[in-house]
Image (cartoon, rainbow, N blue to C red; front, side, top):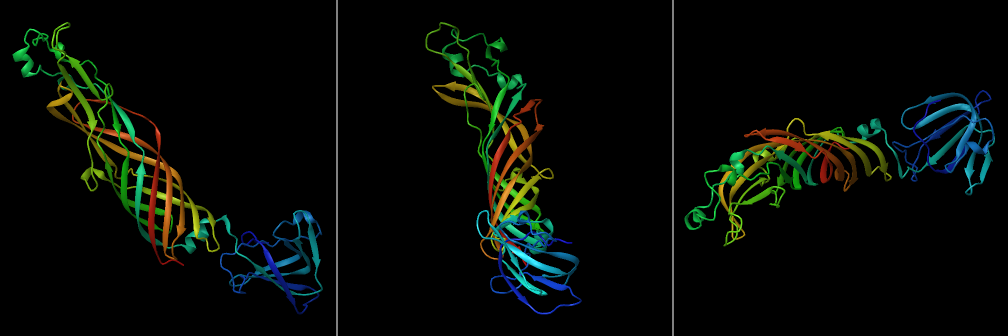
Amino acid sequence: MKRIFKSVFVCAIFVTSSVCHSQNNLIVQALDENQQPLSYVEIIIRGITEDDPEFTDAVGKVFYNLDSLQITSGQEIIIVGTLNGYTMKEGPKKYVIKRLPNINFTTIVFKKPKCGFISLNDYTKKYSKFSIGFGFGYKKGDHVTLGNIPRNIRTVDPHPDDVKYRPDDILDPNNPDNYLIIENTVHVALEHRISLDVHFRFWGILNIAIQTSEIKGSEVKENENFYRKSYIKEGSPGGDALIYYLVRSKNRSFLDRNSFSLPIYITYPVFYCGKNKEVIFHLVGGTNLLLSDKISLEAEKGWHRFNERQKETTFDLGKLKETEFFAGFKIEGAFTKSIRFGLQFTLVYTEYQEDFNVPLSLQQSNEVLPSLRLNLTKLFGYK
């Protein structure tokens, strides 16, 4: 016997007419509350020959002696056998067996289930082969560690004013180590970013997005990416004279050349809710391996005078390429028959590839970070 999905609630049973060769023809037809044929209804017909309540549950069951099964066009199923009766649940633990006379035709009216699992085959048949939409996303910030910062970045000559007005107080300018900041490892914060995208979906499953994102430059933090040193002799009057260097990520705006990426991902349908499957729960997985965005890095050195930085030189350190791998879930609901609104939550693992102009070492955090995305999608050819 063949299953046509899983049954839900039995509303009514109607019976009528004749016998053929001492057997009954049981015709089970799925109708809605308005006596109209249902599409994608979930039905089970089981061949049960014993009056055993263990075979029943809240939805009720038809039981009969099964001889053969014939499926006709549409939603009609013809079962040739001896119809004995059906069971219904009348209380939490009470089942009642309803006996039927020697009849050969019955129509069972089903209500569509409000929630349930959805098969990939049903989803691809029902949903649009092509859709286009817009998305807005947020990703939590990450960080990397850069080592082997070159000596020329960490070395700053004494300020001209100190050379002129405090020559006896400063350390020997002829010894370069007196003006070298020892720390050569920095932690660079990669701030959270906002993204915008245009996405294209095929068969409701395969998604390709053209995405651009904005990111702010790193904050300057003492002893993380910002280091200072005094070059005044110990015990000299007049206070310290400080040199500094720092490393940070640069601002990146929407539509910048480095801000574009191409996420490709799968949205696999698993569960639905609603009479017409208005809400679909998907599993999501993908990557932007084909085209990843980039973050520019820079170093700066100079003097720290009167609690303000006085920049001497800026260095372009190169770029970090961000390749993301993400997985999570998405809930998508219907505004109208062809407009969908989605909420997507994923966990993102990022691999950073270096494209540096100087020989730096790179160590990444290896953290898995949360990401949230909202999208609005227009379906074409929705069934």
